[in-house]
Length: 176
Image 1: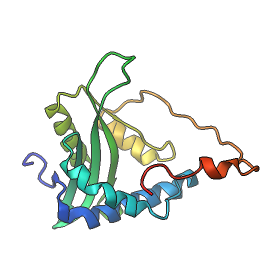
Image 2 (image 1 turned 45 degrees about the horizontal axis):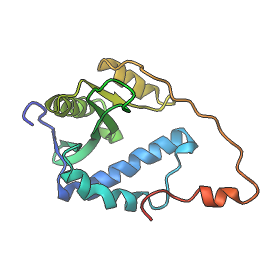
Image 3 (image 1 turned 60 degrees about the vertical axis):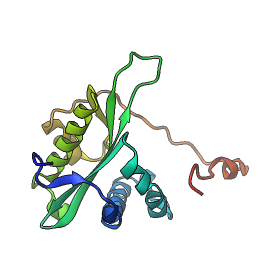
Image 4 (image 1 turned 180 degrees about the horizontal axis):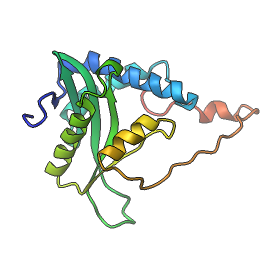
């Protein structure tokens, strides 16, 4: 990706480094809001899907390198709205992370531009993403790239069930 000199598509041998950065991302989110507590088997789940992400043409993982070391990554997937809305092709930017020591050096911007280039190659009309409201640095970053608020996601905290009903309903979904 000549136009993004520090960015390339992830490869098999990047799995361990990207997995470590991904855990760093999760831990930073959890430090900002404990509702993002990291599951004990999070890395195992991530590793379970990594090979599929590399070969699935509807998904992309980009890495940013500096000095021969991967310092950041972005994950994205092709997305479209539910069929009740007019058809539109979008790319959902799932995760963007740059190691703290490598921030403010343009790596995050290059990663976003690589995702944008990939989205355009798919014929997507927009990139969709979410960020934590407890992260004003991320809000400023995205605004600097022209991102604008589209929807607001809200949460309502519920009291845990006391009759044992939560045991069955709180089982992990997916990988077991």
